[in-house]
Length: 190
Image (cartoon, rainbow, N blue to C red; front, top):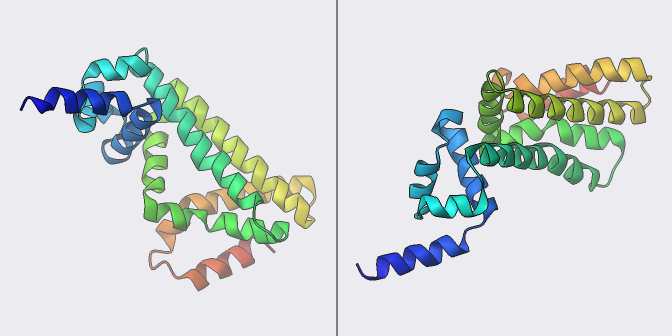
């Protein structure tokens, strides 16, 4: 038992703000925003609340970091990965349209849903969500313009494509990749 404080102390020193943020996002995915509490996170990470305050001024600072991390991973990171792929704009759009099926398996869809629910009552989350939605729509519309659609049609089709992304995993419960591919080709890439 004498080793417990040293173990806890060494654990606390190895934590950084990213670890706290990641743990908070995991809790958000499982319990929603109300589950993101400093005491719960400290216990889960095996450290004291003091460790939290070494990295964040308060819970609001953690919430802000969570939204920034989600924006970076779920939007900017996805765009960077898609842009790093060889191929045409049509190929990149096809890859992008399959992202919801990939994030469903890694819990990203649940994080997105939790943030959307959080945004209903928190202006900071709502603002982050609006920014992410706009970034995603602009990116999709840009790919569609590269394919050759005029700007007004690309913008309209981007809204349709984004709506498809948001609900496609629910509509195609079997996860039939061929059916998804056909939907993308017929409805979005035509």
